[in-house]
Image (cartoon, rainbow, N blue to C red; front, side, top):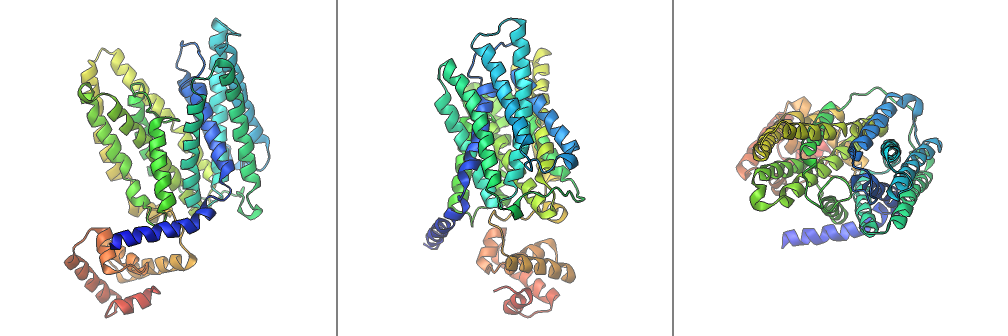
Length: 476
């Protein structure tokens, strides 16, 4: 009954906040939604018949990576990207030019070798235009709160899936219109979203000194490589773009954060991709029994999930360090190259004559070992918080200045009293006003263990009971 009461309380509280969280969401929804739908219809799952002399997606991805690297290297001269309309105009021009190239070939206006060259040019222009769009989008998105970033990103990816669904099966003329209209609408909506930002909230051109969160980038690279190993064999409906697997992940994430924002725990969420990708690759060798759908969906969902988690961590770090998120987003975009390389390794193994069953088994074992090692060694909550200032692992709802002050006081007291890591965790939860049962449930510890830790905390902090400790922390 108590759990049900808490659930109803969260729903009522969420109802009060929703009008604030979703205020001004429409430009954001259709900016990323239309852009992602365009990528799917143009390149990821082409809606027009195009020559198959090469992998269109590889050309698109390499151009995407190159523009990301170029912006990262020239960031100090280019930022803020949205300060003028030139970058948005460049992105729109590249994406529309790509559409026109693909349309000319798809409807038969150009044929033969010229068609292949035109498709390659279109894919390269599209990759550069979409890469630039994502950096412009990230810069605008970084100006709003983390909970809104999360909701807008997941909802816009759902919009992309809906757009693709309604465009699927259209005749060539209507597809051609969609390929021109979608990127145009995306850039217009992005401009509207930026214009609606208060002047005080707009991105700053100043780039202070900072430390790159390289472990986050290494982790994403490993997941990208693992996804690439299996990308060419994914079942229908699975994939990183506007697919059914993406829709499932984004719908669950949006609903969880929308209805239970106060209970939505990023610390728990960021471990989930490991479980999904390990289970997915373990199912690969037995696909003859279970089919390819289960493994494909798990692998795709893990990659979609890790992508949004990494993006959230980078937005949080950007806010804490005062660094423009464009630099982080550019590096994240450039890591798409690991998907290509993963696919290349899988193709090389197949070309070498390795039996398909043996290939699946080798890849599954290698990926599971790699993911376990990477997640356990590269990414720890403690280092994320201490080294790069990440504070969203407990949840997306931003803390009040008073709550932040209590957290800082708890950290200072823990360092001064030389508390152990577990005692420090308990002290932080006490500072948040949580009672004994709530702390035991969150940390999965027994009552006796909790009481022993509290006794040590009292002794080291020089207090006699919980009331005195709370007073020392300034907690209720």
